[in-house]
Image 1 (cartoon, rainbow, N blue to C red):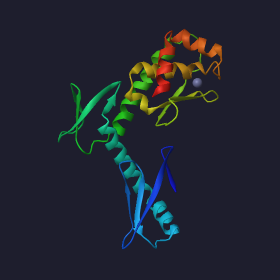
Image 2 (cartoon, helix red, strand yellow):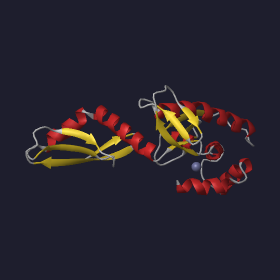
Image 3 (tube, helix red, strand yellow):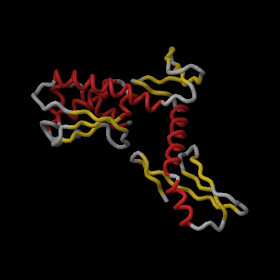
Image 4 (cartoon, rainbow, N blue to C red):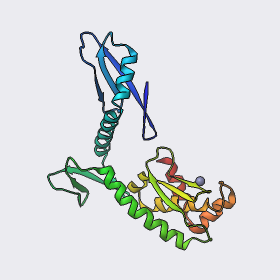
Length: 212
Ligand SMILES: [Zn+2]
């Protein structure tokens, strides 16, 4: 069994234990949704339980993912910070440390920063773009397999929220890449020439982004 959330698949593991009377659901550190139940619990019951508790499970996944991410460090604009939990409201950066309290919603904060910065960079790069293109509208969301998407019909450019964690040059590269699709819908030589026209050293960033 698997559960879909934010474009990602999470495995649902069922642990059946002798003498287990209640059934409960946890999301473990490895991000597997684990259902612990008795030996005789029918599969249909477990499936229904998982479906009925979908929202709650998603919250548990968010919580675990934040925890995992914080253990890996807190990334913002290409810098890594050590998370220090404190009683203060809001967020403050001091050297290589970031101070937040337990209830701080990091994803919400990332989104807020991204909304401001991504639009600012989009406008700057749009104004200096080497060709006349329609002004694109911007969407931001979490994506797992792409940094950006351009809909050439609606002129909507969707950027991956994760870009807020990287150096701003990667964001610029993705914006230029997607804006270039408004002229060339494919990845032809002419497309790459246009990207190069607007970012001469784009190859470095293109190759590095493949490795993330
Ligand atoms: Zn492309």
